Amino acid sequence: MSDKELYIQKIQSEINEWKAQIELFRAKASSATADAKISINNNIKAFEEKVEEGKAKLEELSKSTESTFDSMKKTFETKWEIIKTAIKDTTKKLNA
Image (cartoon, rainbow, N blue to C red; front, side, top):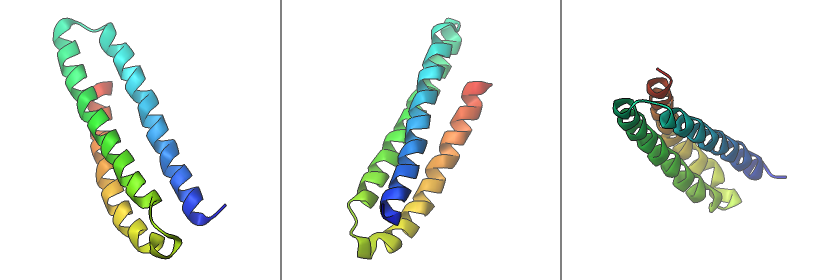
């Protein structure tokens, strides 16, 4: 398996973990009060948007050729860190 394929698998695993977290947060929302549900659902929506953004960036990276992968990976990693930070912030809000 190439470095590109391994890297993409690693990132896809992170996305899958985030999807699982979303389901846990939905379960939390179902047992919350009405006011809390609104807040939780808004945060879940923000979380989902970042996950979708991450999936789109990963799709762009996966379409790269072996020769352009390294340069695209650097750009991807910068954007990926921004997405991860936003997801961590949202996770903190949802766990509060």
